[in-house]
Image (cartoon, rainbow, N blue to C red; front, side, top):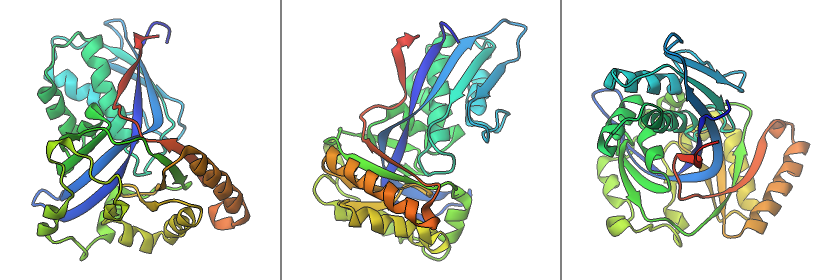
Length: 308
């Protein structure tokens, strides 16, 4: 798509995830700390002729639908309804690198990327609170990717409070060849919900402080126990991450991705190499990908000043 606008859409991990209760609308009340990481999808977009379909969406991922169920398509439709006079037909191509149903927020990040693209393609003068309102309609994680870096999410996870950038950290991701549907993860949590008052124990974020630099024991995910009970290989991989030097290892979001935190890049790379070798010898972990990466202070970002 020569001359198109291009955005890069990061993945995320959850460094803290407490599930406080179930709301009347069926969603859960969450208290979470998002952290964007250096694993990116890419969306190319350009306007089309007026007689073209409202959206022509293509992707390089063979299992990803490109109909109205895709979050990119839903983002285009949501903004089209909000600004019908400015809307024009668009063509978008989505290049996927973030696994599906991996707990890394790829679909939500893509939706945020589409919103950013359309504000430029349609020359919209949209204030950030309005864009965040549209993002919340699309999904609980979508507003985070408009902010990026590290941020606390409350409510459904969609009430975002940016946190000052933490020191760079290295991660090793364990990416299984299967996903964990979010609904199944929360169903598995039945009867294990955190008491509401525990939300008050979240480390102090006042003044934009990032509190978990030294005390990694504070990192917790309430979905981990029920998910590991149904998909025990995920827990085994976390144990191996620790055995190979991770200071802390845990499930991201509802899974299926697990990750370990490392202080230094060389240590993360050595662990990733060793885990690939170990996994190749164990039939349970054949087909897994092991990816070393780092945290990033960015959310959705335009490439090359916006155009390529």
